[in-house]
Length: 549
Image 1: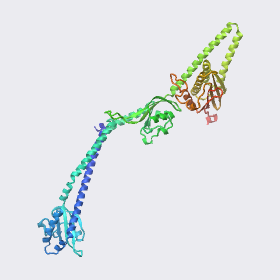
Image 2: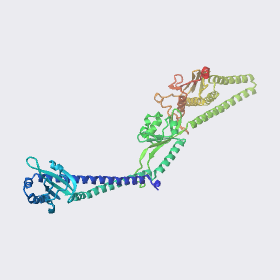
Image 3: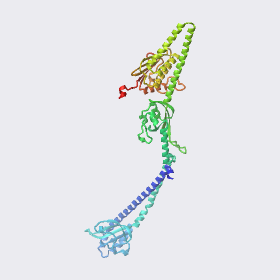
Image 4: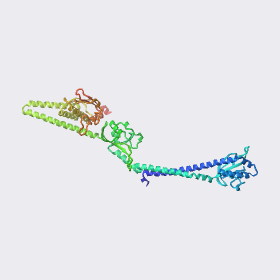
Protein backbone atom coordinates (compact mmCIF):
# COMPACT_ATOMS: atom_id res chain seq x y z
CA UNK A 1 0.00 0.00 0.00
CA UNK A 2 2.79 2.41 0.94
CA UNK A 3 4.63 1.69 -2.31
CA UNK A 4 1.67 3.16 -4.19
CA UNK A 5 1.85 6.45 -2.31
CA UNK A 6 3.22 9.47 -4.10
CA UNK A 7 6.26 11.36 -2.90
CA UNK A 8 4.00 14.18 -1.70
CA UNK A 9 1.90 11.85 0.48
CA UNK A 10 4.93 10.11 1.92
CA UNK A 11 6.58 13.39 2.73
CA UNK A 12 3.39 14.73 4.30
CA UNK A 13 3.00 11.68 6.57
CA UNK A 14 6.70 11.71 7.49
CA UNK A 15 6.63 15.44 8.25
CA UNK A 16 3.41 15.07 10.25
CA UNK A 17 4.92 12.33 12.40
CA UNK A 18 8.05 14.40 12.84
CA UNK A 19 6.02 17.45 13.87
CA UNK A 20 4.04 15.34 16.36
CA UNK A 21 7.23 13.95 17.88
CA UNK A 22 8.82 17.39 17.93
CA UNK A 23 5.74 18.91 19.52
CA UNK A 24 5.69 16.24 22.24
CA UNK A 25 9.41 16.65 22.88
CA UNK A 26 9.30 20.44 22.96
CA UNK A 27 6.13 20.45 25.09
CA UNK A 28 7.68 18.08 27.60
CA UNK A 29 10.90 20.06 27.74
CA UNK A 30 9.03 23.34 28.19
CA UNK A 31 6.82 21.81 30.90
CA UNK A 32 9.79 20.41 32.82
CA UNK A 33 11.60 23.72 32.48
CA UNK A 34 8.52 25.62 33.72
CA UNK A 35 8.16 23.27 36.68
CA UNK A 36 11.82 23.61 37.61
CA UNK A 37 11.61 27.36 37.31
CA UNK A 38 8.49 27.42 39.52
CA UNK A 39 10.19 25.30 42.18
CA UNK A 40 13.29 27.49 42.04
CA UNK A 41 11.20 30.62 42.27
CA UNK A 42 9.31 29.18 45.28
CA UNK A 43 12.62 28.32 46.94
CA UNK A 44 13.95 31.86 46.45
CA UNK A 45 10.73 33.35 47.82
CA UNK A 46 10.77 31.08 50.90
CA UNK A 47 14.43 31.89 51.44
CA UNK A 48 13.59 35.59 51.52
CA UNK A 49 10.76 34.97 54.02
CA UNK A 50 12.87 32.74 56.29
CA UNK A 51 15.83 35.14 56.34
CA UNK A 52 13.55 38.11 57.03
CA UNK A 53 11.92 36.34 59.99
CA UNK A 54 15.29 35.16 61.31
CA UNK A 55 16.66 38.71 61.23
CA UNK A 56 13.74 40.08 63.25
CA UNK A 57 14.95 40.90 66.85
CA UNK A 58 11.61 39.70 68.14
CA UNK A 59 12.54 36.11 67.39
CA UNK A 60 15.84 36.34 69.28
CA UNK A 61 14.13 37.99 72.27
CA UNK A 62 11.32 35.42 72.34
CA UNK A 63 13.81 32.58 72.13
CA UNK A 64 15.32 33.72 75.44
CA UNK A 65 11.91 33.93 77.18
CA UNK A 66 10.36 31.09 79.20
CA UNK A 67 7.45 30.64 76.69
CA UNK A 68 8.59 31.50 73.14
CA UNK A 69 5.37 30.21 71.54
CA UNK A 70 3.24 32.81 73.27
CA UNK A 71 4.97 35.62 71.39
CA UNK A 72 6.06 33.87 68.22
CA UNK A 73 2.94 31.90 67.22
CA UNK A 74 0.76 34.97 66.45
CA UNK A 75 3.70 36.61 64.66
CA UNK A 76 4.38 33.54 62.52
CA UNK A 77 0.74 33.13 61.54
CA UNK A 78 0.56 36.78 60.49
CA UNK A 79 3.75 36.62 58.42
CA UNK A 80 2.63 33.31 56.84
CA UNK A 81 -0.62 34.89 55.74
CA UNK A 82 1.07 38.01 54.37
CA UNK A 83 3.87 36.15 52.55
CA UNK A 84 1.64 33.45 51.05
CA UNK A 85 3.56 30.65 52.75
CA UNK A 86 1.95 27.38 53.75
CA UNK A 87 3.95 27.24 56.97
CA UNK A 88 6.52 29.16 59.03
CA UNK A 89 8.05 27.05 61.78
CA UNK A 90 10.28 28.69 64.38
CA UNK A 91 12.06 26.09 66.49
CA UNK A 92 14.72 25.63 69.12
CA UNK A 93 18.11 24.25 68.10
CA UNK A 94 16.94 20.88 69.45
CA UNK A 95 14.04 20.78 66.85
CA UNK A 96 11.31 21.74 69.34
CA UNK A 97 8.64 23.64 67.43
CA UNK A 98 7.64 27.04 68.85
CA UNK A 99 5.29 27.88 65.91
CA UNK A 100 3.25 25.82 63.47
CA UNK A 101 0.07 26.27 61.34
CA UNK A 102 -1.46 23.52 63.43
CA UNK A 103 -1.51 24.30 67.16
CA UNK A 104 -1.39 20.60 68.08
CA UNK A 105 2.10 20.35 66.55
CA UNK A 106 3.58 22.94 68.96
CA UNK A 107 6.23 21.44 71.21
CA UNK A 108 6.79 18.48 68.92
CA UNK A 109 10.10 17.92 67.08
CA UNK A 110 10.61 19.38 63.61
CA UNK A 111 10.77 16.88 60.75
CA UNK A 112 13.53 17.69 58.35
CA UNK A 113 17.25 18.40 58.06
CA UNK A 114 18.74 21.19 60.23
CA UNK A 115 22.42 20.28 60.18
CA UNK A 116 23.48 23.09 57.78
CA UNK A 117 21.32 25.62 59.63
CA UNK A 118 22.98 24.76 62.98
CA UNK A 119 26.29 25.57 61.27
CA UNK A 120 24.97 29.03 60.42
CA UNK A 121 24.02 28.36 56.78
CA UNK A 122 20.79 29.08 54.92
CA UNK A 123 19.67 26.18 52.72
CA UNK A 124 16.61 25.07 50.76
CA UNK A 125 15.29 21.56 50.30
CA UNK A 126 12.27 19.60 49.12
CA UNK A 127 11.16 17.10 51.73
CA UNK A 128 8.02 15.65 53.31
CA UNK A 129 6.73 17.04 56.61
CA UNK A 130 3.52 17.04 58.56
CA UNK A 131 1.79 18.97 55.75
CA UNK A 132 3.17 16.68 53.07
CA UNK A 133 6.00 17.28 50.53
CA UNK A 134 7.07 20.91 50.50
CA UNK A 135 9.70 23.33 49.31
CA UNK A 136 11.24 24.86 52.44
CA UNK A 137 14.13 27.09 53.44
CA UNK A 138 15.76 26.89 56.91
CA UNK A 139 17.60 29.96 58.20
CA UNK A 140 19.52 30.25 61.57
CA UNK A 141 18.75 32.92 64.19
CA UNK A 142 22.05 34.14 65.62
CA UNK A 143 22.89 36.34 68.61
CA UNK A 144 25.55 39.04 68.69
CA UNK A 145 28.32 36.48 69.19
CA UNK A 146 27.13 34.39 66.24
CA UNK A 147 25.69 31.55 68.23
CA UNK A 148 22.60 29.85 66.81
CA UNK A 149 19.74 30.41 69.25
CA UNK A 150 16.81 29.33 67.04
CA UNK A 151 15.87 28.15 63.55
CA UNK A 152 13.24 29.44 61.11
CA UNK A 153 11.69 27.18 58.45
CA UNK A 154 9.44 28.78 55.79
CA UNK A 155 7.88 26.75 53.02
CA UNK A 156 5.07 25.99 50.60
CA UNK A 157 3.69 22.58 49.88
CA UNK A 158 4.39 20.85 46.58
CA UNK A 159 0.67 20.86 45.89
CA UNK A 160 0.73 24.65 45.96
CA UNK A 161 3.70 24.75 43.60
CA UNK A 162 2.00 22.32 41.23
CA UNK A 163 -1.02 24.56 41.12
CA UNK A 164 1.27 27.39 39.99
CA UNK A 165 2.76 25.10 37.37
CA UNK A 166 -0.69 24.11 36.19
CA UNK A 167 -1.44 27.75 35.57
CA UNK A 168 1.18 27.72 32.82
CA UNK A 169 -0.17 24.61 31.10
CA UNK A 170 -2.66 26.51 28.87
CA UNK A 171 0.17 28.62 27.50
CA UNK A 172 2.23 25.47 26.90
CA UNK A 173 -0.70 23.82 25.17
CA UNK A 174 -1.19 26.90 23.01
CA UNK A 175 2.47 26.88 22.00
CA UNK A 176 2.38 23.14 21.26
CA UNK A 177 -0.84 23.49 19.31
CA UNK A 178 0.57 26.37 17.28
CA UNK A 179 3.71 24.36 16.53
CA UNK A 180 1.61 21.36 15.47
CA UNK A 181 -0.70 23.42 13.27
CA UNK A 182 2.11 25.40 11.60
CA UNK A 183 4.17 22.25 11.03
CA UNK A 184 1.18 20.41 9.55
CA UNK A 185 0.37 23.39 7.32
CA UNK A 186 3.96 23.59 6.11
CA UNK A 187 3.93 19.85 5.41
CA UNK A 188 0.68 20.18 3.47
CA UNK A 189 1.97 23.10 1.39
CA UNK A 190 5.21 21.27 0.66
CA UNK A 191 3.29 18.12 -0.25
CA UNK A 192 1.05 20.11 -2.57
CA UNK A 193 4.09 21.62 -4.28
CA UNK A 194 5.75 18.23 -4.69
CA UNK A 195 2.51 16.73 -5.99
CA UNK A 196 2.42 19.40 -8.69
CA UNK A 197 6.12 19.03 -9.56
CA UNK A 198 6.23 15.22 -9.55
CA UNK A 199 2.74 14.91 -11.06
CA UNK A 200 1.64 12.65 -8.22
CA UNK A 201 4.21 9.94 -8.97
CA UNK A 202 5.98 7.85 -6.37
CA UNK A 203 9.76 7.44 -6.11
CA UNK A 204 9.63 3.96 -7.64
CA UNK A 205 7.74 5.31 -10.64
CA UNK A 206 10.15 8.23 -10.98
CA UNK A 207 13.15 5.89 -10.79
CA UNK A 208 11.62 3.68 -13.48
CA UNK A 209 10.78 6.68 -15.64
CA UNK A 210 14.32 8.05 -15.23
CA UNK A 211 15.72 4.68 -16.28
CA UNK A 212 13.54 4.80 -19.41
CA UNK A 213 14.65 8.34 -20.23
CA UNK A 214 18.27 7.43 -19.64
CA UNK A 215 18.01 4.47 -21.99
CA UNK A 216 16.27 6.52 -24.67
CA UNK A 217 18.76 9.36 -24.31
CA UNK A 218 21.76 7.15 -24.96
CA UNK A 219 20.18 4.89 -27.57
CA UNK A 220 18.90 7.49 -30.06
CA UNK A 221 20.99 8.15 -33.14
CA UNK A 222 20.62 11.90 -32.74
CA UNK A 223 22.71 13.97 -30.36
CA UNK A 224 20.85 15.57 -27.44
CA UNK A 225 22.29 18.37 -25.29
CA UNK A 226 20.57 20.12 -22.36
CA UNK A 227 21.65 23.65 -21.39
CA UNK A 228 20.37 25.51 -18.32
CA UNK A 229 19.53 29.20 -18.10
CA UNK A 230 23.08 30.03 -16.94
CA UNK A 231 24.71 28.49 -20.00
CA UNK A 232 25.87 25.27 -18.32
CA UNK A 233 25.74 21.95 -20.18
CA UNK A 234 23.61 19.93 -17.77
CA UNK A 235 23.60 16.74 -19.81
CA UNK A 236 24.42 15.36 -23.22
CA UNK A 237 24.30 11.88 -24.67
CA UNK A 238 27.06 9.87 -26.33
CA UNK A 239 26.04 10.87 -29.85
CA UNK A 240 26.22 14.58 -28.98
CA UNK A 241 29.64 14.07 -27.42
CA UNK A 242 30.84 12.39 -30.62
CA UNK A 243 29.38 15.00 -32.97
CA UNK A 244 30.54 18.01 -30.93
CA UNK A 245 33.88 16.61 -29.82
CA UNK A 246 32.99 16.66 -26.11
CA UNK A 247 33.99 14.39 -23.27
CA UNK A 248 31.31 11.81 -22.32
CA UNK A 249 29.18 12.88 -19.35
CA UNK A 250 26.80 10.87 -17.18
CA UNK A 251 23.34 12.22 -16.38
CA UNK A 252 23.94 11.71 -12.64
CA UNK A 253 27.12 13.80 -12.61
CA UNK A 254 27.39 16.73 -10.24
CA UNK A 255 25.64 19.69 -11.85
CA UNK A 256 27.97 22.18 -10.16
CA UNK A 257 30.85 20.76 -12.25
CA UNK A 258 28.96 21.17 -15.54
CA UNK A 259 31.00 23.16 -18.08
CA UNK A 260 29.81 26.41 -19.59
CA UNK A 261 29.08 26.61 -23.32
CA UNK A 262 31.64 29.42 -23.63
CA UNK A 263 34.39 27.07 -22.37
CA UNK A 264 33.70 24.23 -24.83
CA UNK A 265 35.63 23.78 -28.11
CA UNK A 266 32.61 24.31 -30.37
CA UNK A 267 32.27 25.92 -33.76
CA UNK A 268 31.45 29.66 -33.42
CA UNK A 269 28.04 29.30 -35.05
CA UNK A 270 27.07 26.44 -32.71
CA UNK A 271 28.33 28.32 -29.68
CA UNK A 272 26.30 31.40 -30.63
CA UNK A 273 23.18 29.28 -31.13
CA UNK A 274 23.48 27.49 -27.78
CA UNK A 275 24.27 30.67 -25.86
CA UNK A 276 21.35 32.57 -27.41
CA UNK A 277 18.77 29.98 -26.40
CA UNK A 278 16.63 30.91 -29.41
CA UNK A 279 14.36 28.45 -31.17
CA UNK A 280 15.92 26.84 -34.25
CA UNK A 281 14.47 24.45 -36.86
CA UNK A 282 16.76 22.36 -39.06
CA UNK A 283 19.63 24.86 -39.03
CA UNK A 284 22.79 23.68 -40.78
CA UNK A 285 26.11 24.28 -39.00
CA UNK A 286 29.57 23.33 -40.18
CA UNK A 287 32.25 21.97 -37.87
CA UNK A 288 35.78 20.83 -38.54
CA UNK A 289 34.58 17.23 -38.89
CA UNK A 290 31.17 17.41 -40.51
CA UNK A 291 27.88 19.08 -41.37
CA UNK A 292 25.32 19.18 -38.54
CA UNK A 293 21.59 19.86 -38.57
CA UNK A 294 20.46 21.42 -35.27
CA UNK A 295 17.00 21.90 -33.77
CA UNK A 296 16.66 23.83 -30.52
CA UNK A 297 13.76 24.79 -28.25
CA UNK A 298 13.03 25.77 -24.65
CA UNK A 299 12.86 23.16 -21.87
CA UNK A 300 9.68 24.06 -19.97
CA UNK A 301 8.14 22.61 -16.83
CA UNK A 302 4.66 21.09 -16.53
CA UNK A 303 1.65 23.34 -17.10
CA UNK A 304 -0.57 24.15 -14.15
CA UNK A 305 -4.04 22.62 -14.12
CA UNK A 306 -5.68 26.04 -13.79
CA UNK A 307 -3.64 27.55 -16.60
CA UNK A 308 -3.08 30.76 -14.63
CA UNK A 309 0.59 30.19 -13.95
CA UNK A 310 3.03 30.16 -16.84
CA UNK A 311 5.29 27.08 -16.93
CA UNK A 312 8.85 27.59 -15.75
CA UNK A 313 11.66 27.58 -18.34
CA UNK A 314 14.61 25.49 -17.18
CA UNK A 315 16.86 26.13 -20.18
CA UNK A 316 17.06 24.80 -23.73
CA UNK A 317 17.28 21.38 -25.34
CA UNK A 318 18.97 20.88 -28.69
CA UNK A 319 18.99 17.86 -30.98
CA UNK A 320 21.82 17.34 -33.46
CA UNK A 321 21.89 15.21 -36.61
CA UNK A 322 24.92 14.37 -38.68
CA UNK A 323 24.45 15.38 -42.31
CA UNK A 324 28.04 14.79 -43.40
CA UNK A 325 27.25 11.56 -45.23
CA UNK A 326 24.30 13.16 -47.02
CA UNK A 327 26.48 16.06 -48.13
CA UNK A 328 29.14 13.61 -49.30
CA UNK A 329 26.56 11.78 -51.35
CA UNK A 330 25.36 15.12 -52.71
CA UNK A 331 28.93 16.01 -53.63
CA UNK A 332 29.35 12.68 -55.39
CA UNK A 333 26.05 13.20 -57.21
CA UNK A 334 27.17 16.66 -58.29
CA UNK A 335 30.44 15.15 -59.53
CA UNK A 336 28.50 12.56 -61.52
CA UNK A 337 26.35 15.34 -62.96
CA UNK A 338 29.48 17.22 -63.91
CA UNK A 339 30.94 14.17 -65.60
CA UNK A 340 27.62 13.52 -67.31
CA UNK A 341 27.54 17.11 -68.54
CA UNK A 342 31.11 16.78 -69.70
CA UNK A 343 30.28 13.63 -71.63
CA UNK A 344 27.28 15.36 -73.16
CA UNK A 345 29.42 18.32 -74.17
CA UNK A 346 32.12 16.05 -75.53
CA UNK A 347 29.51 14.07 -77.41
CA UNK A 348 28.19 17.28 -78.92
CA UNK A 349 31.70 18.41 -79.91
CA UNK A 350 32.58 14.95 -81.19
CA UNK A 351 29.47 14.93 -83.36
CA UNK A 352 30.44 18.31 -84.84
CA UNK A 353 33.97 17.14 -85.56
CA UNK A 354 32.74 13.87 -87.01
CA UNK A 355 30.38 15.73 -89.33
CA UNK A 356 33.25 17.96 -90.35
CA UNK A 357 35.48 15.00 -91.18
CA UNK A 358 32.65 13.21 -93.06
CA UNK A 359 32.01 16.35 -95.10
CA UNK A 360 35.71 16.68 -95.97
CA UNK A 361 35.79 13.04 -97.06
CA UNK A 362 32.67 13.50 -99.19
CA UNK A 363 34.33 16.48 -100.84
CA UNK A 364 37.35 14.32 -101.63
CA UNK A 365 39.67 16.22 -99.32
CA UNK A 366 41.13 13.17 -97.65
CA UNK A 367 44.40 14.74 -96.58
CA UNK A 368 42.66 17.65 -94.87
CA UNK A 369 40.23 15.27 -93.08
CA UNK A 370 43.15 13.15 -91.83
CA UNK A 371 45.08 16.21 -90.69
CA UNK A 372 41.99 17.56 -88.82
CA UNK A 373 41.42 14.22 -87.02
CA UNK A 374 45.10 13.88 -86.10
CA UNK A 375 45.34 17.35 -84.55
CA UNK A 376 42.12 16.86 -82.59
CA UNK A 377 43.34 13.52 -81.25
CA UNK A 378 46.72 14.96 -80.29
CA UNK A 379 45.10 17.82 -78.34
CA UNK A 380 42.79 15.53 -76.35
CA UNK A 381 45.49 12.93 -75.80
CA UNK A 382 47.97 15.58 -74.63
CA UNK A 383 45.48 16.87 -72.02
CA UNK A 384 44.74 13.32 -70.86
CA UNK A 385 48.41 12.35 -70.66
CA UNK A 386 49.32 15.51 -68.74
CA UNK A 387 46.59 14.97 -66.13
CA UNK A 388 47.22 11.27 -65.63
CA UNK A 389 50.99 11.71 -65.39
CA UNK A 390 50.71 14.55 -62.85
CA UNK A 391 47.72 13.77 -60.70
CA UNK A 392 47.85 9.99 -61.06
CA UNK A 393 44.21 9.71 -60.05
CA UNK A 394 41.75 8.80 -62.83
CA UNK A 395 38.73 10.23 -60.98
CA UNK A 396 40.38 13.65 -60.64
CA UNK A 397 41.58 13.55 -64.22
CA UNK A 398 38.06 12.76 -65.39
CA UNK A 399 36.67 15.53 -63.21
CA UNK A 400 39.07 18.14 -64.56
CA UNK A 401 38.53 17.08 -68.14
CA UNK A 402 34.78 17.22 -67.60
CA UNK A 403 35.07 20.73 -66.14
CA UNK A 404 37.16 21.71 -69.18
CA UNK A 405 34.39 20.55 -71.49
CA UNK A 406 31.76 22.35 -69.38
CA UNK A 407 33.82 25.56 -69.40
CA UNK A 408 34.21 25.37 -73.16
CA UNK A 409 30.45 24.96 -73.57
CA UNK A 410 29.83 28.08 -71.43
CA UNK A 411 32.34 30.14 -73.36
CA UNK A 412 35.06 30.04 -70.72
CA UNK A 413 38.64 29.12 -71.52
CA UNK A 414 39.98 26.65 -68.93
CA UNK A 415 43.79 26.69 -68.94
CA UNK A 416 45.28 23.68 -67.19
CA UNK A 417 48.93 23.37 -66.09
CA UNK A 418 49.95 20.08 -64.50
CA UNK A 419 53.42 19.24 -63.31
CA UNK A 420 55.09 16.75 -61.00
CA UNK A 421 54.51 13.10 -60.39
CA UNK A 422 53.31 11.53 -57.13
CA UNK A 423 50.75 14.03 -55.92
CA UNK A 424 47.36 12.56 -55.14
CA UNK A 425 48.59 9.12 -54.15
CA UNK A 426 47.32 8.42 -50.60
CA UNK A 427 45.08 11.47 -50.36
CA UNK A 428 41.33 11.11 -49.82
CA UNK A 429 39.78 11.11 -53.29
CA UNK A 430 36.36 12.26 -52.05
CA UNK A 431 37.88 15.30 -50.36
CA UNK A 432 39.93 16.09 -53.48
CA UNK A 433 36.77 15.89 -55.61
CA UNK A 434 35.02 18.23 -53.18
CA UNK A 435 37.87 20.74 -53.29
CA UNK A 436 38.52 20.77 -57.02
CA UNK A 437 34.87 20.43 -58.05
CA UNK A 438 33.62 23.34 -55.93
CA UNK A 439 36.56 25.62 -56.73
CA UNK A 440 36.24 25.05 -60.48
CA UNK A 441 32.45 25.46 -60.36
CA UNK A 442 32.76 28.83 -58.60
CA UNK A 443 35.56 29.95 -60.90
CA UNK A 444 33.65 28.99 -64.09
CA UNK A 445 30.50 30.72 -62.75
CA UNK A 446 32.47 33.87 -61.95
CA UNK A 447 34.24 33.93 -65.32
CA UNK A 448 31.03 33.23 -67.24
CA UNK A 449 29.37 36.27 -65.66
CA UNK A 450 32.34 38.54 -66.46
CA UNK A 451 33.07 40.34 -69.75
CA UNK A 452 35.45 38.77 -72.25
CA UNK A 453 38.01 37.40 -72.18
CA UNK A 454 36.53 34.75 -69.90
CA UNK A 455 39.31 32.66 -68.46
CA UNK A 456 39.96 30.17 -65.65
CA UNK A 457 43.45 28.94 -64.82
CA UNK A 458 44.08 25.67 -62.95
CA UNK A 459 47.60 24.78 -61.85
CA UNK A 460 48.24 21.43 -60.19
CA UNK A 461 51.77 20.75 -58.96
CA UNK A 462 52.52 17.46 -57.25
CA UNK A 463 55.56 16.06 -55.54
CA UNK A 464 56.80 14.14 -52.54
CA UNK A 465 55.67 16.98 -50.26
CA UNK A 466 52.05 16.80 -51.37
CA UNK A 467 49.73 18.54 -53.78
CA UNK A 468 49.66 22.24 -54.66
CA UNK A 469 46.44 23.51 -56.28
CA UNK A 470 45.83 27.04 -57.62
CA UNK A 471 42.57 28.20 -59.21
CA UNK A 472 42.23 31.70 -60.72
CA UNK A 473 39.35 33.24 -62.64
CA UNK A 474 38.70 36.41 -64.62
CA UNK A 475 35.62 37.35 -62.58
CA UNK A 476 35.12 40.49 -60.53
CA UNK A 477 37.17 39.13 -57.62
CA UNK A 478 36.46 39.17 -53.87
CA UNK A 479 36.26 42.26 -51.70
CA UNK A 480 39.01 42.22 -49.02
CA UNK A 481 36.48 42.61 -46.20
CA UNK A 482 34.49 39.59 -47.48
CA UNK A 483 37.40 37.11 -47.57
CA UNK A 484 36.59 35.79 -44.07
CA UNK A 485 32.92 35.34 -45.01
CA UNK A 486 33.26 33.29 -48.19
CA UNK A 487 33.77 30.08 -46.21
CA UNK A 488 30.84 30.72 -43.92
CA UNK A 489 27.79 28.57 -44.55
CA UNK A 490 25.03 30.52 -46.29
CA UNK A 491 27.29 33.23 -47.74
CA UNK A 492 27.23 33.60 -51.52
CA UNK A 493 27.52 36.36 -54.08
CA UNK A 494 25.22 34.45 -56.45
CA UNK A 495 21.45 34.21 -56.39
CA UNK A 496 20.03 31.37 -54.33
CA UNK A 497 19.11 28.28 -56.28
CA UNK A 498 16.47 25.69 -55.49
CA UNK A 499 18.78 24.00 -52.97
CA UNK A 500 20.29 27.15 -51.46
CA UNK A 501 23.72 28.70 -51.82
CA UNK A 502 26.81 29.16 -49.69
CA UNK A 503 27.70 25.53 -48.96
CA UNK A 504 30.34 24.72 -51.58
CA UNK A 505 33.25 26.82 -50.24
CA UNK A 506 32.31 25.88 -46.67
CA UNK A 507 32.71 22.21 -47.66
CA UNK A 508 36.03 23.08 -49.32
CA UNK A 509 37.33 24.60 -46.11
CA UNK A 510 36.14 21.57 -44.15
CA UNK A 511 37.85 19.14 -46.53
CA UNK A 512 41.13 21.13 -46.44
CA UNK A 513 41.08 21.08 -42.63
CA UNK A 514 40.44 17.33 -42.58
CA UNK A 515 43.50 16.82 -44.81
CA UNK A 516 45.63 19.15 -42.60
CA UNK A 517 46.11 21.52 -45.53
CA UNK A 518 46.21 25.29 -45.86
CA UNK A 519 44.26 27.67 -48.07
CA UNK A 520 44.69 31.33 -48.93
CA UNK A 521 42.45 33.69 -50.93
CA UNK A 522 43.66 36.71 -52.82
CA UNK A 523 42.79 38.56 -56.00
CA UNK A 524 44.79 37.44 -59.04
CA UNK A 525 47.19 39.87 -60.69
CA UNK A 526 47.06 38.05 -64.03
CA UNK A 527 43.32 37.40 -64.47
CA UNK A 528 41.94 40.12 -62.19
CA UNK A 529 39.55 37.74 -60.43
CA UNK A 530 39.77 35.58 -57.33
CA UNK A 531 42.76 33.35 -56.64
CA UNK A 532 42.48 30.25 -54.43
CA UNK A 533 45.73 28.58 -53.41
CA UNK A 534 45.59 25.24 -51.56
CA UNK A 535 48.47 23.15 -50.24
CA UNK A 536 47.72 19.57 -49.21
CA UNK A 537 50.55 17.70 -47.47
CA UNK A 538 51.29 14.14 -48.52
CA UNK A 539 50.14 11.49 -46.02
CA UNK A 540 52.81 9.96 -43.82
CA UNK A 541 54.08 6.57 -44.97
CA UNK A 542 56.42 4.51 -42.79
CA UNK A 543 59.68 3.43 -44.34
CA UNK A 544 60.56 -0.20 -44.91
CA UNK A 545 62.83 -0.11 -41.85
CA UNK A 546 59.97 1.26 -39.70
CA UNK A 547 57.58 -1.38 -41.05
CA UNK A 548 59.93 -4.21 -40.12
CA UNK A 549 60.71 -2.76 -36.72
